[in-house]
Amino acid sequence: MSEHKDPQTREEWQEALDMASVLMLIDARKYGLITGGPEVNVERCADVLRRGAARGYKPSADAVERLLPVWM
Image (cartoon, rainbow, N blue to C red; front, side, top):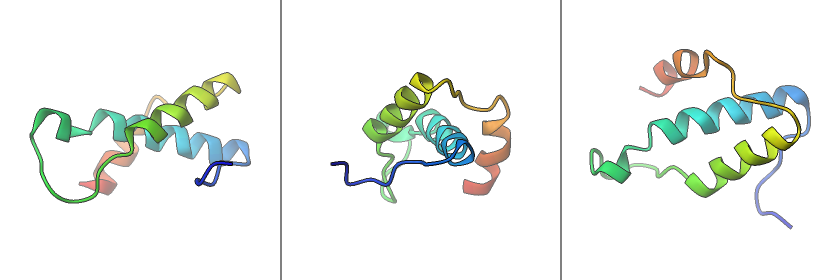
């Protein structure tokens, strides 16, 4: 059993996919651009994206524009 709570509704899947796609884009640690702070769980993001796609969902086209300002 997964230690993470899985999305249950279409809206929750959409939110999870949008967040996962943005976090994968901004995971700057791999380039040594940032240190400290919370780390992106790349494996979990990839899992959410894969399982969402298997259910026919995809990240929103405007996910970066909507979510990046919230985290910066």
